[in-house]
Length: 244
Ligand code: 6PG
Image (cartoon, rainbow, N blue to C red; front, top):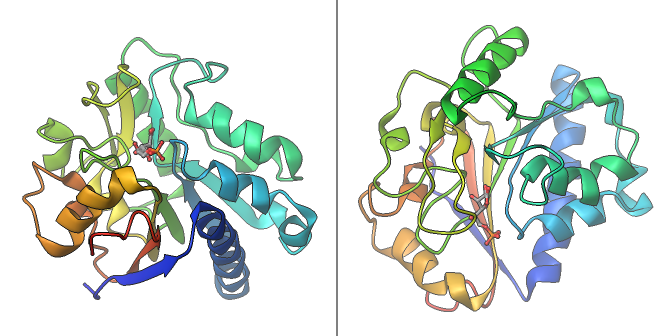
């Protein structure tokens, strides 16, 4: 695994702008090399600004949208029109504003009886796109102040899953208190590029823990993101990086 790249920019707006540029450049390269760009979106609030910027003409006009295949790293076990849904957030900020063909957007199913059933259905859907372990071009990740990423929460069985591509999980300690569906570490660590987007002073302690203290994965799951052959980037604002 290569050493992570740590990029620190002044504020959340700059994180959003750098994220939009990174996505655009990675997409251009992926499409040149392989004819398509596979992107995994993060949920939560941090990436919202980046998604909205990506929808602006200064970026959207540079993008070959029909060559994008868009996925999600995790999802709350709620209907897709629920305001807590990561798919709803992506639609509100990005997807409803750009000409990506609907068939190229792959939301995580949340309509079955349990989160685990949804994870199994999702994996079956992924297998129609990827005959073997997916190697996504770019995986965007957030970081909870409890050290979780995607919906890989401290102390949960999902942390130890090494064969399934997706699993259901009970909630972590951070809201919203709903079950989740999440990609597992084997998929995250197969990515060509994994990027954490972290802003705000509330994240400074957990960023220090992750980047300076090498905590156990059960305590700070985000430490488990260590791409086998891909790159890992931490894109931080100065507030989140304040204790590095
Ligand atoms: C989710 C995300 C989760 C999020 C972190 C950070 O479904 O909420 O996948 O992993 O990225 O909790 O959330 P914020 O960006 O809102 O701080």
